[in-house]
Image 1: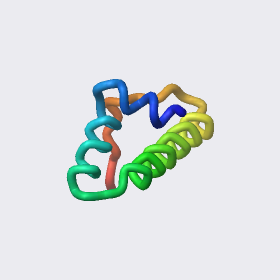
Image 2: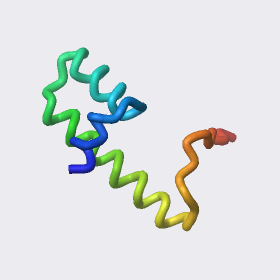
Image 3: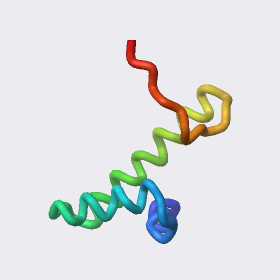
Length: 61
């Protein structure tokens, strides 16, 4: 349900969905990818014990 709700809010996930559907991907396939993104983000937040920071840039060494 979180993935479906995210599609209603303008932002990064809605743009991702629109881009993938425009590329010809099946809608349910893209929604499953959104679910996976949510799971990874929640796990990362719980593991680090910090709030999610949208402005965080990865430091690639």
